[in-house]
Length: 208
Image (cartoon, rainbow, N blue to C red):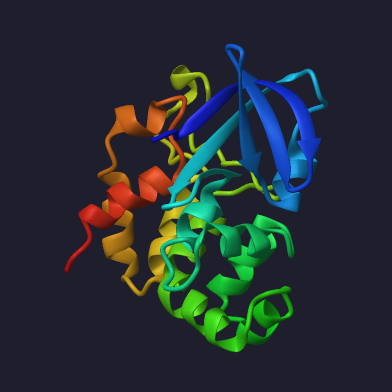
């Protein structure tokens, strides 16, 4: 199964693009938002890919984090997920799901009331977590300084986001403070750690 492509963008014919990897051209279907974020033809590109195999063909879909979640919902296949992502930015869609905005989701072309309700029921908690890990432009927010030496005994500012998320989930402040304080220092100091990873780690130590 192909999960990632790194090569040269040689052709685009929305919603398809062709990525040349070592002389082999891969046809990849992308949402309008993903297409808009791609570099110019002839430049290098890296795409995360979902391989969808049926009896008649094998299709590749280029995507971001939200695509992964959408295709877990009943009756939402890769083509439907791409169509949904073409209706708005991933952040706006994730925020609508997180706040359980069924009416807002039905304004996206191809999303009926039943699908919108399924998205909310199955994904609103996951989208709450996803949105917290993004910056305003939809990039993954780093949760630590690139220089570990700058981490001091004072709580890292982004750990406040973890504490806020836990509080919003219903845990008491003393439980939250303990969970955040117990996060391993080496984990917090990692240059590639994200808020999502820190939050998942903190959740493991919360009372059940």
